[in-house]
Image 1 (cartoon, rainbow, N blue to C red):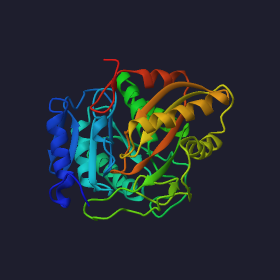
Image 2: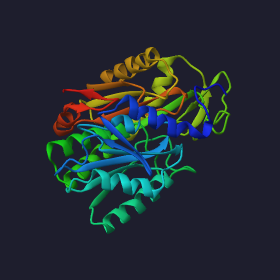
Image 3: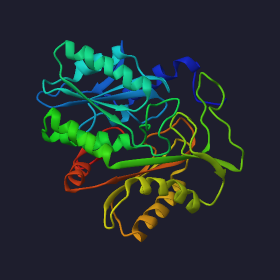
Image 4: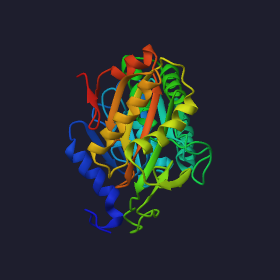
Length: 333
């Protein structure tokens, strides 16, 4: 294992300290129990958004702290859910009196721990709503989830729900936006090579040089099948087709096309993938109205990509375009 780390067991601690130092003035790190929140939290009268999960997916979630997006992020150990205590602390830290929305990826540990945290926060008089993101079409069930996994579509949910909170929607309204985005968003990924969890010291799975894993999870969970390596356009088609089949889009749909890197894929290759996906959507009569390309929901240094498609209506288009200012995503300010 060759990584830019010190002690493998200190990776998360040193990562969040470095992140907070790099973005001082925008985010605040609380180390006991560990969570991060935007520097101006709590914002009085605004619904607060809290998300989190295992580390190793940076910039998710702390990279999306700030105006128009998340109010707090709770990083767990590498690929492992945070316990309820830091989630409760984060919830209390950002509650501005209008309630708190928990955005939770559909992994069993995340769901159970955020559920416990919501109950504890409500015992202290904070109203909490929870939205579970389950955009991954690769599998219906696995060892890690009860139902579909939450993957890159989480970014779209957090962006649109954050914009709804920023414009002044109440808690029910913000939660409704988040659920609607989840309902019209689908994703699927593919791995060319695995990542290595620092404390494990070895790759999380193995692939032959001529193999790729179709439908990989962001923790290295198995996908639909292993297939032979092929040119980029063929691989994009294999990833995109299940997404479109699941969405069952009517012709002329307005779409957000999001091509996400898994951590070890050059941006040049992500743009090759985006080019092909946009071409396919256009050929089928759809409008790619908005786009996002880059490493936003990673899996350490895994080589690969995912494709996320969201069906946009007028309100979601407005929410996506609304100003956002976070370390990893910013426009309009």
